[in-house]
Length: 449
Image (cartoon, rainbow, N blue to C red):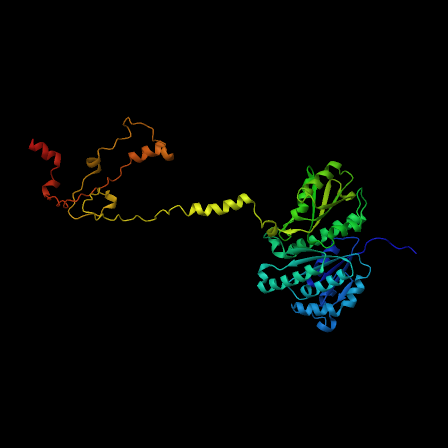
């Protein structure tokens, strides 16, 4: 009797979202993996592309679904634990895919994950979070399921649906957007299975994968491809720059699994270039395991798959700022508060009440006009302003950035002269004579002489 010695990897899609993820992976013709769907909705399971089905809570729900109530989904999974454990017999690694926020995925997925984890199976959770437009209540429900899921798995990958807007445009269909989210699960599973089943120069076994992912908490999976000049660097950067994943920092990764796949034209230099690009993004103490496989169909292209576990959230990585930034943040407000604000409206001067004080006359713009005040032109009071044709020094022509031609143009324009009021009585109106309208003034002066 011959026993086939290879790891058994199972993907279980829980609820509607998990079932859709499994269907998309089956359509992608992923090899080396067994697919199962588990649901409380019997009608939804009949449309699945796999015949491996687990009906959850037949007595609890009568096959009609959980009604968006996580407690119903949890009770249904507990009822069907015997069927779940039967599927898990002999499994080495299980991916539990579900959408958080509903009833079956939120309630049943943690129960299935815990059942696998308790049996010593390497358990990976891949979950999605709701869109913002689905409301606060559904988001809170999802967060509750996420925490239960985190406690039941070795590593957890979170894909917020809201992040789909980072890569979608106005022409992206709803189905295409969800397929992008499902690709995160597909890339991770394919990257791991290829390392163990595809031929290559640097082959990895299941023990290597277990070393990287066992009990590591938050994880990320990514895959990138490149072709032409710089294809190795392009593929590596695409693999680690996944806008769909929740905000996490690759810097804190404790374990990294790298799979570099290409045709037989892949060079040693390209292998080194791709691996070093990823290595620069993680800590020096991170446990990095590298594998390289050949795939003839990739002639002219290179594919890089990355599984990084033990990651930090971006917020956690940025909690402690650099000392220099801290000092600057403290000192800057103290300087700003010492600057007096510039008044936006003119302030009326207050008269001095001292008997021996004699103030200077205010400019005309600040003095109220008085009745009977005599008007005097600015030229008479301050002297004639030099014309642009005068031979005057040009030292101020560009002061404060003013252009000479702009100043000359302003001087040539006829502008009304400012009026300076005096404290004297306002001049009486001049006498008006009808004869002035008929005889011009210069003719009258000529006649008088």
